[in-house]
Amino acid sequence: MNEFRLSKRLETVASFIPKGAVLADIGSDHAYLPCYACLHGCASKAIAGEVADGPFRLAQQQVEKSGLSHLISVRKGDGLSILAPGEADCITIAGMGGALIARILGDGKEKLAGVKRLILQPNIGAELVRRWLLDHGWELVAERILKEDGQIYEVLVAERGDARRPYRHLEAELLLGPFLRRENSEVFREKWKREIENWKRIIADLTAKGQSEAAERKKRELERKVQLVEEALL
Image (tube, rainbow, N blue to C red; front, side):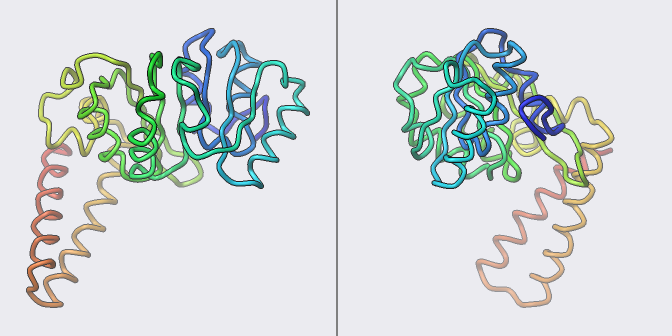
Protein backbone atom coordinates (compact mmCIF):
# COMPACT_ATOMS: atom_id res chain seq x y z
CA MET A 1 0.00 0.00 0.00
CA ASN A 2 1.23 3.51 -0.82
CA GLU A 3 -0.01 6.93 -1.95
CA PHE A 4 -0.87 5.52 -5.39
CA ARG A 5 -2.46 2.21 -4.39
CA LEU A 6 -4.56 1.79 -1.26
CA SER A 7 -5.85 -1.33 0.45
CA LYS A 8 -9.33 -2.39 -0.62
CA ARG A 9 -10.61 -1.09 2.73
CA LEU A 10 -9.15 2.40 2.33
CA GLU A 11 -10.00 2.50 -1.37
CA THR A 12 -13.64 1.99 -0.38
CA VAL A 13 -13.35 4.85 2.12
CA ALA A 14 -11.75 7.06 -0.55
CA SER A 15 -14.53 6.30 -3.04
CA PHE A 16 -16.98 8.25 -0.87
CA ILE A 17 -14.90 11.46 -0.63
CA PRO A 18 -16.80 14.15 -2.60
CA LYS A 19 -14.74 15.56 -5.46
CA GLY A 20 -12.98 18.75 -4.42
CA ALA A 21 -13.56 18.21 -0.70
CA VAL A 22 -11.35 19.63 2.00
CA LEU A 23 -10.55 16.38 3.79
CA ALA A 24 -9.56 15.76 7.39
CA ASP A 25 -8.26 12.23 7.97
CA ILE A 26 -8.17 11.47 11.67
CA GLY A 27 -5.75 8.75 12.73
CA SER A 28 -4.00 9.06 9.39
CA ASP A 29 -1.06 6.73 10.14
CA HIS A 30 1.21 7.03 7.04
CA ALA A 31 -1.13 9.62 5.48
CA TYR A 32 -1.71 7.29 2.53
CA LEU A 33 -5.41 8.16 2.34
CA PRO A 34 -5.03 11.99 2.14
CA CYS A 35 -2.09 11.62 -0.27
CA TYR A 36 -4.13 9.30 -2.49
CA ALA A 37 -7.17 11.61 -2.29
CA CYS A 38 -5.16 14.66 -3.35
CA LEU A 39 -3.24 12.84 -6.09
CA HIS A 40 -6.45 11.43 -7.58
CA GLY A 41 -8.43 14.66 -7.39
CA CYS A 42 -10.86 13.42 -4.74
CA ALA A 43 -9.78 16.16 -2.34
CA SER A 44 -8.62 19.69 -3.15
CA LYS A 45 -6.52 19.73 0.03
CA ALA A 46 -6.30 17.75 3.23
CA ILE A 47 -5.36 17.61 6.89
CA ALA A 48 -3.76 14.46 8.31
CA GLY A 49 -4.12 14.08 12.07
CA GLU A 50 -2.15 11.72 14.32
CA VAL A 51 -1.93 11.54 18.10
CA ALA A 52 1.24 9.41 18.40
CA ASP A 53 4.76 10.63 17.63
CA GLY A 54 5.81 7.73 15.38
CA PRO A 55 2.83 7.79 13.00
CA PHE A 56 2.90 11.60 13.01
CA ARG A 57 6.51 11.62 11.76
CA LEU A 58 5.76 8.89 9.20
CA ALA A 59 2.84 10.96 7.90
CA GLN A 60 5.07 14.02 7.57
CA GLN A 61 7.68 12.01 5.67
CA GLN A 62 5.06 10.51 3.35
CA VAL A 63 3.52 13.89 2.52
CA GLU A 64 6.97 15.36 1.77
CA LYS A 65 7.98 12.31 -0.30
CA SER A 66 4.76 12.64 -2.33
CA GLY A 67 5.43 16.32 -3.02
CA LEU A 68 2.14 17.31 -1.39
CA SER A 69 3.27 19.58 1.45
CA HIS A 70 1.49 22.49 -0.25
CA LEU A 71 -1.82 20.60 -0.14
CA ILE A 72 -1.66 18.46 3.02
CA SER A 73 -1.15 19.77 6.54
CA VAL A 74 0.08 17.09 8.96
CA ARG A 75 -0.89 17.82 12.57
CA LYS A 76 -0.30 16.15 15.92
CA GLY A 77 -3.20 15.99 18.35
CA ASP A 78 -6.06 13.93 19.71
CA GLY A 79 -9.04 13.39 17.44
CA LEU A 80 -10.75 16.49 16.11
CA SER A 81 -8.71 18.82 18.35
CA ILE A 82 -6.41 19.41 15.35
CA LEU A 83 -9.21 21.17 13.44
CA ALA A 84 -10.73 24.62 13.59
CA PRO A 85 -14.53 24.76 13.15
CA GLY A 86 -15.37 25.02 9.44
CA GLU A 87 -11.87 24.05 8.32
CA ALA A 88 -12.83 20.73 6.69
CA ASP A 89 -16.02 19.66 4.91
CA CYS A 90 -15.33 15.90 4.87
CA ILE A 91 -13.92 13.82 7.72
CA THR A 92 -12.62 10.26 7.49
CA ILE A 93 -11.91 8.08 10.53
CA ALA A 94 -10.83 4.55 9.62
CA GLY A 95 -9.34 1.53 11.33
CA MET A 96 -10.44 2.19 14.91
CA GLY A 97 -12.99 0.61 17.21
CA GLY A 98 -16.53 1.93 17.09
CA ALA A 99 -16.41 3.13 20.71
CA LEU A 100 -13.29 5.20 19.97
CA ILE A 101 -14.80 6.68 16.79
CA ALA A 102 -17.94 7.67 18.72
CA ARG A 103 -15.77 9.19 21.47
CA ILE A 104 -13.73 11.20 18.95
CA LEU A 105 -16.90 12.56 17.31
CA GLY A 106 -18.49 13.35 20.68
CA ASP A 107 -15.42 15.05 22.15
CA GLY A 108 -14.98 17.15 19.02
CA LYS A 109 -18.57 17.79 17.99
CA GLU A 110 -18.07 21.58 18.01
CA LYS A 111 -15.44 21.03 15.29
CA LEU A 112 -18.07 19.48 13.00
CA ALA A 113 -19.43 22.90 12.01
CA GLY A 114 -19.28 23.08 8.23
CA VAL A 115 -18.64 19.36 7.82
CA LYS A 116 -20.91 17.93 5.14
CA ARG A 117 -19.88 14.27 5.18
CA LEU A 118 -18.47 11.75 7.65
CA ILE A 119 -16.88 8.55 6.29
CA LEU A 120 -16.31 6.12 9.14
CA GLN A 121 -14.76 2.66 9.09
CA PRO A 122 -14.97 0.97 12.50
CA ASN A 123 -13.08 -2.31 12.83
CA ILE A 124 -15.55 -3.42 15.51
CA GLY A 125 -18.59 -1.87 17.16
CA ALA A 126 -20.26 -0.29 14.12
CA GLU A 127 -23.49 -0.32 16.14
CA LEU A 128 -21.98 2.27 18.53
CA VAL A 129 -21.15 4.55 15.59
CA ARG A 130 -24.66 4.24 14.15
CA ARG A 131 -26.13 5.07 17.56
CA TRP A 132 -23.95 8.18 17.84
CA LEU A 133 -24.95 9.35 14.36
CA LEU A 134 -28.63 8.76 15.14
CA ASP A 135 -28.42 10.65 18.44
CA HIS A 136 -26.64 13.65 16.89
CA GLY A 137 -28.63 14.31 13.72
CA TRP A 138 -26.38 12.60 11.15
CA GLU A 139 -28.20 10.58 8.50
CA LEU A 140 -26.63 7.42 7.14
CA VAL A 141 -26.64 7.78 3.36
CA ALA A 142 -24.59 4.72 2.39
CA GLU A 143 -22.91 1.64 3.82
CA ARG A 144 -20.49 -0.87 2.37
CA ILE A 145 -19.27 -4.21 3.67
CA LEU A 146 -16.14 -5.86 2.28
CA LYS A 147 -13.69 -8.66 2.99
CA GLU A 148 -9.94 -8.24 2.73
CA ASP A 149 -7.22 -10.64 3.91
CA GLY A 150 -9.77 -12.66 5.85
CA GLN A 151 -11.14 -9.65 7.75
CA ILE A 152 -14.58 -8.13 7.22
CA TYR A 153 -14.98 -4.35 7.37
CA GLU A 154 -17.93 -1.96 7.30
CA VAL A 155 -17.82 1.60 5.93
CA LEU A 156 -20.50 4.06 7.07
CA VAL A 157 -21.21 7.33 5.26
CA ALA A 158 -23.30 10.04 6.92
CA GLU A 159 -24.49 13.56 6.17
CA ARG A 160 -26.59 16.01 8.15
CA GLY A 161 -30.27 15.24 7.72
CA ASP A 162 -33.07 13.10 9.05
CA ALA A 163 -31.12 10.61 11.17
CA ARG A 164 -34.06 8.18 11.40
CA ARG A 165 -34.81 8.11 7.66
CA PRO A 166 -32.84 4.98 6.68
CA TYR A 167 -34.20 2.87 9.54
CA ARG A 168 -37.26 0.65 9.19
CA HIS A 169 -36.49 -1.71 12.07
CA LEU A 170 -34.41 0.40 14.44
CA GLU A 171 -33.11 -2.20 16.90
CA ALA A 172 -32.04 -4.68 14.24
CA GLU A 173 -30.65 -2.08 11.84
CA LEU A 174 -28.54 -0.26 14.43
CA LEU A 175 -26.81 -3.60 14.90
CA LEU A 176 -26.73 -4.79 11.30
CA GLY A 177 -26.86 -1.56 9.30
CA PRO A 178 -30.02 -0.49 7.43
CA PHE A 179 -28.44 -0.57 3.96
CA LEU A 180 -26.40 -3.68 4.65
CA ARG A 181 -29.39 -5.55 6.07
CA ARG A 182 -31.46 -4.83 2.98
CA GLU A 183 -28.60 -5.69 0.60
CA ASN A 184 -28.00 -8.97 2.50
CA SER A 185 -24.78 -9.72 0.60
CA GLU A 186 -22.68 -12.85 0.83
CA VAL A 187 -20.05 -11.04 2.95
CA PHE A 188 -22.79 -9.67 5.25
CA ARG A 189 -24.15 -13.18 5.77
CA GLU A 190 -20.67 -14.56 6.43
CA LYS A 191 -19.97 -11.88 9.05
CA TRP A 192 -23.18 -12.45 10.98
CA LYS A 193 -23.04 -16.24 10.82
CA ARG A 194 -19.62 -15.97 12.46
CA GLU A 195 -21.03 -13.62 15.10
CA ILE A 196 -23.94 -15.96 15.88
CA GLU A 197 -21.54 -18.87 16.40
CA ASN A 198 -19.39 -16.75 18.72
CA TRP A 199 -22.38 -15.48 20.71
CA LYS A 200 -23.79 -18.98 21.13
CA ARG A 201 -20.45 -20.15 22.55
CA ILE A 202 -20.49 -17.28 25.04
CA ILE A 203 -24.12 -18.02 25.98
CA ALA A 204 -23.19 -21.66 26.64
CA ASP A 205 -20.24 -20.57 28.81
CA LEU A 206 -22.42 -18.15 30.78
CA THR A 207 -25.02 -20.85 31.32
CA ALA A 208 -22.38 -23.31 32.56
CA LYS A 209 -20.78 -20.85 34.96
CA GLY A 210 -23.88 -20.02 36.97
CA GLN A 211 -26.60 -17.46 37.30
CA SER A 212 -25.16 -14.17 38.59
CA GLU A 213 -27.23 -11.11 37.77
CA ALA A 214 -24.52 -9.78 35.43
CA ALA A 215 -24.24 -13.13 33.65
CA GLU A 216 -27.99 -13.36 33.20
CA ARG A 217 -28.15 -9.82 31.81
CA LYS A 218 -25.32 -10.52 29.36
CA LYS A 219 -26.95 -13.79 28.33
CA ARG A 220 -30.31 -12.10 27.62
CA GLU A 221 -28.55 -9.39 25.61
CA LEU A 222 -26.73 -11.94 23.46
CA GLU A 223 -29.84 -14.10 23.01
CA ARG A 224 -31.68 -11.03 21.72
CA LYS A 225 -28.86 -10.30 19.26
CA VAL A 226 -28.90 -13.89 18.04
CA GLN A 227 -32.66 -13.59 17.46
CA LEU A 228 -32.32 -10.33 15.53
CA VAL A 229 -29.55 -11.66 13.31
CA GLU A 230 -31.19 -15.01 12.64
CA GLU A 231 -34.35 -13.18 11.56
CA ALA A 232 -32.30 -11.01 9.18
CA LEU A 233 -30.58 -14.04 7.67
CA LEU A 234 -33.79 -15.97 6.93
